[in-house]
Length: 154
Image (cartoon, rainbow, N blue to C red; front, side):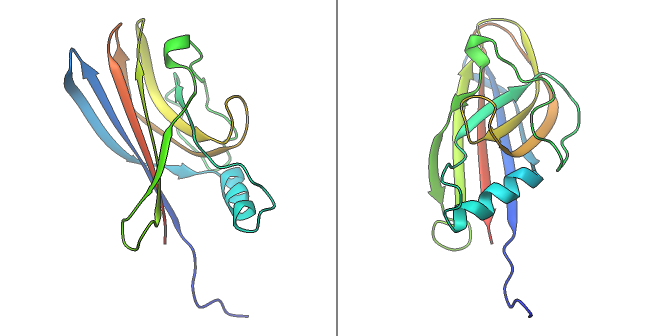
């Protein structure tokens, strides 16, 4: 049987670091969609699973992302930077509502270096759909880190 169409998942994280209200860095990084994430997304299509991905978590490790990842290498759990529910929506990239978007802004209350981010289906543990690492964001108290994740289905 030949499939005439294929579904591709293309994701990116956009990371913005602010200090004193001014953006001091911005990066857009292609993410790695994990194997467990692909399986969960397939389950969402036919309702074998029913939990979407709306939780963003920050990583204190620069360990490169891989499809086999089931967690972040060193998830940050300090209260001001802990995993949190994102504001979710669908946006249009090519056709109407073909891109899932999740955005979250954290405000640091201490010094912390952040190297990565992951998108999860749960407030704790759970399945990681995608992950990316980026250049060190050296946060100090009062800094904000805004992460936008977009996953285009085409």
